[in-house]
Image (cartoon, rainbow, N blue to C red):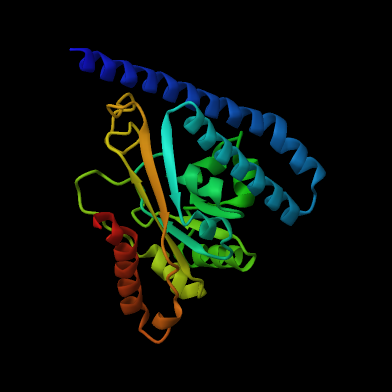
Length: 260
């Protein structure tokens, strides 16, 4: 009887704390949009400086939000090999995608992070001024997308991709699209694989209810950085074969140790 009430108590307060954190996240976004970003766009006229400062602010904001969720006891996050992530330069960072917070964890630990984001954000009057300067819209054609990503990598930026395209559905086979492999093969830049593991239910997965919670009231995340996948060994292969084999290797490397 008492164990039931204890579990209920932990779940209830987890949900309350999680909702408060997301409210603060939203308020933080409003503050950045109206009070922080406009002066940067006004005083830093050089586009490259604008990009660098904006990326750094977003990185620090996401890292701070992660710390807030840890301090409040909403989640624990265990990092393995994260130094490789923090010092990465001109890498295509590929990760599985179990929850809403994956991109927050990655951007919070990656300097000069670039992403491919929904083109609808370009129409949002509040964020389009910043989004259009530092991220790539998903509405671009394949050739233009490769060009934009290649230019970003040449500048030393790291591009974060989720080869699944959408969040993982628990219990269903994971399938990777070949977009990351095609990008790596077209540009010649290496892939840095990352595996993200989480206790279910987290209230953050694709089919989770937002108000669900683990029995202990804390979501446990493990973020593990794998060894870099070098592209040079695929250079002499025909592109379709190379893309297929590289995608299979990426899938294996990200998930291989999950069962160890």
